[in-house]
Length: 202
Image (cartoon, rainbow, N blue to C red):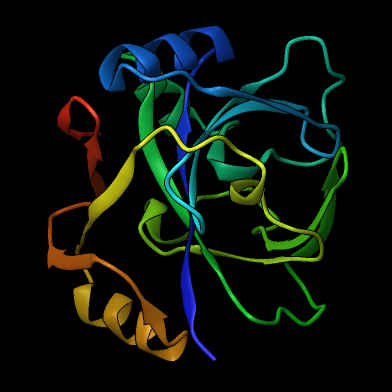
């Protein structure tokens, strides 16, 4: 059994800012997502084909503060400082065929969607963002319900000070996909997207 890209995570200070940034760069329309009561966040979504999507996520100012750190490092000073310069691709999530219960594995929901996801207890980004979180869907995933905007992931570039360790991790997941792992002084992600209007890098 293999793992594959489930979704890319773009974070923003506000959802409106994130949506405007994404739509301005790709020249396509993002779709409404919903609210994540467990973490006090909300999102909009964009199809990347039948098996993957892109999520723009932000803290929901109308939601009560969660009783734990938010996912994707959204509460961390480092991520907040980064987002002060604008929305950014900060993480990615791999779909896996099974995800047993255990520490750091949460059962979550949003509307009719049900899934389990790996989330560090401190809310940090695994590997600084380049090591994928793992997700297993208990209901059909969002791509099955999103309109096709003609956007596809061409390549995901993952820079890390420990490329061999990341490659071993992806092999252990039997990950299949267009991913390049390379050495970098600090974690960095870049995604090359094919769009109806030409290639765009996030």
